[in-house]
Image (tube, rainbow, N blue to C red; front, side, top):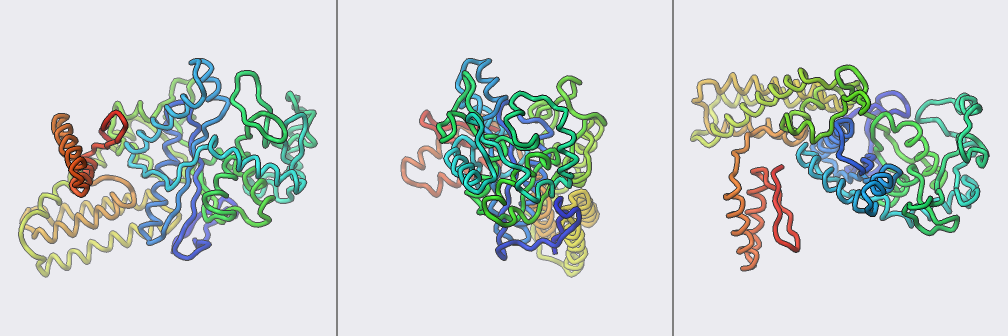
Length: 469
C-alpha cells in the first residue's frame, strides 16, 4: 500500500487512483529561457522516480510535464539576441532534453508547450468569464479570487490576512482590479512582444492558466497526482486549483506532492551570490548519475544541501554500486546452475527488495530505498567474494539489483564500456545500409545496441546525428 504525503491535507494518505491500475500525473516543467539549473533538476529526478516506482508496482502511468515557452524572460532574451522567441525556446527545450537524458530522466508521456495550447486557454478563460469567475478591464482578464470560496486551501493561507498585506502595495494596474489578490488570466501585448488574438485583446495568457489547460486537455478534469517544487504551492498551484475547479465544479487533483528547496553549502542558490550552478556545470565535474544519486539520497520533502563534499560522497557511493553490478555481470556469464546454498541466499537477498519497497511505499522515501540497495550490494559482494558462484546465482542477484537501482531509482548499475567514435560511425553506416535494404529489424538492433552503450541517435533530413548520453 503506497502512502503519499498530500500537501492539501498535510498528512500521509493511502494512494487510491481514480481508475484502478492507471495513474494520471502532471508535473510543472521549466521555463525554457536558459540551461536548466540543479534546482530544476531536483523535481525532474524526484518525480521521474515516483513515476518509475508506480510503474514498478504495476500501474500504467500517463505522465505529463510541460515546457513554458512564452514568458517575460524568454522575450527579454529574444530581444537581446534579436531573434524570435521561438528560437530561444526551441534551443533550450533541446538543451533541457539533453540534460534530462544525461540524468536518466525519462521523457514524459506528453511534453506539451504553452504556445501550442493558446486556443484551449482562450476557451477556458471564456468559460471563467461566463461563470462569473473572471472579468475584463482594458483588454486584461482577471480572476476573481473572492468568488472562489476555497481559495487558499492548498497553501493554507488565510485570504483576509493575505488581502491586508496587499493594501499598502501600489502596483501599476492594481487600480483596475476588484481585489488586490485577483490574478491575470490574459494580458494585452506590449511593443515587441509575441501575441495571439483573443476576444479581449491581442496579447498572451497569464502563467497559471497554462497548466490548468494542459492538464485538462491531456489528463482530464480530475487527475491523480499534481506535483512540483514547493515554491509553486502559492500562487501557481493555488491559482490552478481556483481556475480548474471553477470550470469543472469538482476536485482538480487528488494528491499534491511538492519537493523541498535545494541549497548550496547551506545558502539559497543565487546568481548574485555566485553559487548558481546549471546541470551542465555539474556535468563538467561529475557523471550526472552522481547528481541523480545525490538527489535521491534525501527524502524529497527534506531540504537538500548541495556541496562538493556531498557530491564526492555520492560519487564514491555510485562507484560501489557500479563495481558490484559490473562484477555480477561478468560472473553471470559463467557456467553453473543454482546450488541449494545459493537458493537460500537468494531468499535472504529478497529481504532487501522488501526493505526497498517498504521505503518507497512510505511516501517514496528514496533515502531509505538507497540504503536498501547498498545493503543488497554488501550482501552480493559478500556472497560472491570467492568468485566461484554459479552464473545463475550471479545473474539472479544482478537482476534484482537492476530492478531496484536501474528500474526504479534510475541509477545504472553496470559500467558501460567506452565506444570509440569510429565504432559509432561504422555501426551507423551499417544501420543506414540495413534500412536501405528494408532490414528494419537489424536497424532497430543497432539503434538499441548503441543506446545500451550510451549513444543516442537522431534521424534528420541532413543525416544521422549522434550524442553521448
